[in-house]
Image 1 (cartoon, rainbow, N blue to C red):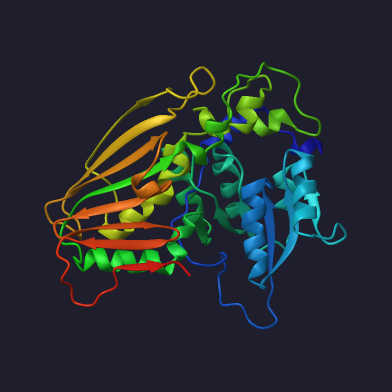
Image 2: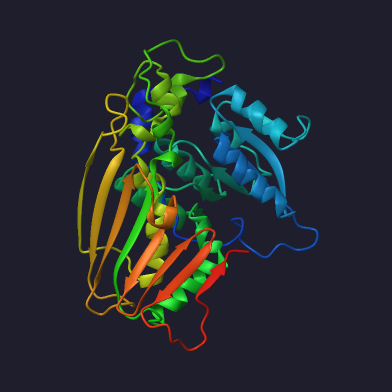
Length: 361
């Protein structure tokens, strides 16, 4: 294991090596269509709740064999092995993801670590000849993201980011409806998520520093982040600290803004303005628990004059009691959509027979 030791300085060097995923598909990251006798060897890096969910989805395709799991906390490894009924004699477990990447029978890996650990394993996986499914947000910093794209391109790998809403047929339908101007020209799109969705909203108590939990390699968990003594808030609420997360702006917002970008056929806004603060969990976390960001776009596929897009992160009730969602305001109607389905309210009750609502399958 001496060859696997890495200093904190080496971690910081590695953080500049990055990857970002541009190839978005509806299924596992595979290079060719899977034949009747072909199986895809899969490894999981980060076997917490999201990693376990992702791996379970891969297993349900009936096209993969789980080869190995990696996590810096042995409890997470045990939970995933038991939760997905994986056989210890067939599936290897490692505390260091680099041992997992040595497997020649692994074709693709899932990177489901905390946000600050997305870039390094993804780049290393590409360099090891693996395709990658990396959870959103793609990277913790812009520089990491650029390095990730370079690694995927240089090594000719298939990389998909975890914006899985793209696989929803009703989201595709909504994009088509908006581009067809079914609610006229879109002038604004509001997106929101309420506090109940985040661990930040459930951890109001500031915990003192302490010894790391049993079986947790805290130094490896920190990885490219600066050193801090173990703290329960920092560990379980990592999205609330700038060195390891970005609050709901990098947690839920990517899902919502991604659908907006898809619908309006835009790559980036012209200007961005944001304001917010710690008004709910003051003194516990660093990232805002209440936030409003406004993005201004030039001419788009849904309005040649441009439009505004907003993201809200706050307490309270959402429009029509929706905890999260997207609402597009047009000159001839309003369209709401989330993972459950969509609804359209036309300005004029007379319409030409197109569906006013649909539920997700």
